Image (cartoon, rainbow, N blue to C red):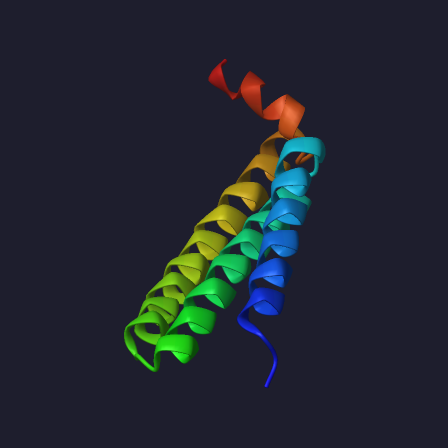
Length: 100
């Protein structure tokens, strides 16, 4: 059996990669993919501890996180399509110009 520390280290690496993607990238699609990577890292931690303690609470929480992430992606992609139609680009730096 693989030690719990390996799963937690993998989740930490995935979460850090997600944070770097959100902070350093300017493309909105890559930012959303990085957010999903962060959600999946959190899900991996929930599943790891649920398996370690033999509880179903963590697995039930993962279902709710995945549902929320799916709704976030649907709304985010719809917003990106509308922004692309009006601005012609989905560059994050240009999104602060939506006020006027």
